[in-house]
Image (cartoon, rainbow, N blue to C red; front, side, top):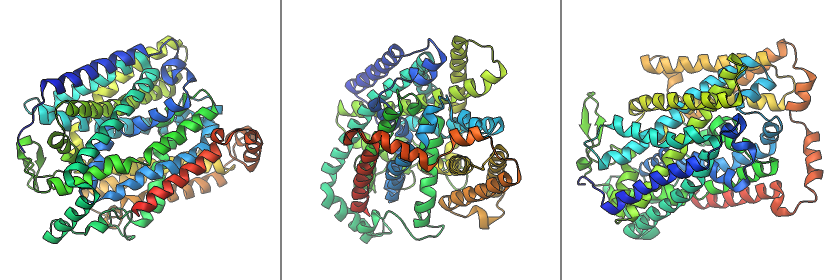
Length: 566
């Protein structure tokens, strides 16, 4: 594949988009008070909440990661997408009411109300770290992959800094209101762009039959290790060598999804901005519905790319990888560089004008995820740390602190981007590996705290520390190649085992120490009485306003789509 250059029309479309979205974001900003800046005044309606959740989740890192794994015939990556619908139903039923009624700004703040300040500060700290090294850095990395092809002579450092500044340009002055409103525009553009690239892939490959026959031919030639009918396997055997062991799907995927959608500040913050509980629930379910068709518009193109570009020489793109000898060499094909799958599809298939539109959509996805994580991390720094250290600050001073924190965070994220490929060849695998260490202890303390009245602050903190100690041990063991019996366990097995260990520690320590206050038990733990009272409140609502009916419909739609590919 020869080097790529954009036409004037494509460049004009991209520039107009970037300038337009920055202007729109700033115009929608709210910063008169800390509640307006960090939670958009808590007056967002359900469509905005739902689309914002989807856009924040489907960033350019996810889009490139999904197509990369699909190219490697790991289409079971779709399990992360449809499982989001199931997790969001659980979230809407059990957790969201407690979050909204408590009027908290952050998830660590909620953890403090249920337990104590130790859990709050620890969770806040690791969430900030996760926002930087998982979400913001991977988004910048993905954006660099796209633009580096067009501008190979520009150092990646300058591209990454430019992308970071573009996303921060409206996030810093406008806060969450700017972020959420721009995400609505960006989500629409992203979906349109994904549908366009899917259409051109289908035309080029000859439709579904052309794709399946092409996969079988590659299997017959020895290029693929599986026939076409097995490319869409959703789960494999329960061993550590499978991409998606069925046991990992049953226990690991829901765990990671629960952390991401129900505990992660940068996702939950959008729901905290909802005008009331119903709008929060409807928005969460709407986001789950939008996740279901992702397999058609984001994963299938990666599978079709196997047929279209398996023998494509991409050395002309000057994309460098590190070989086994530790040398930086030009990548010659997609088999060695699957992260380049989506960029190659863009530049090989799309005509002038449409190419600029789709690249603008990809940059939209990148800026959505980056702005989301920057705003949430600055909220954590401001509301969980600065307000404790300087309780006398005014609301406007807190806004200023949040803006300064955003600048610092975006610089740290840009710095960390250079280490992503050193950790994992696959962007999606990188995201899940890091998440697999952060999520289990946090999910354990949230679940135990909601459903067990005896859970207390001592048990929660002990569980978090136990999770931290084990994670550090596994990371060090992997670096220095000892304890292979533990380090070689599949991360989708490792995560639920770690959570189980944290739950056991939580229960033991809580049982040996004084119980929480009755007020905490009454207001922050779930009981059947709450469900019965809510049932009476829902009796007079139309079916399309009853979130329980909507949740059942969403689960049925999800089951039908998953069954089609199973």
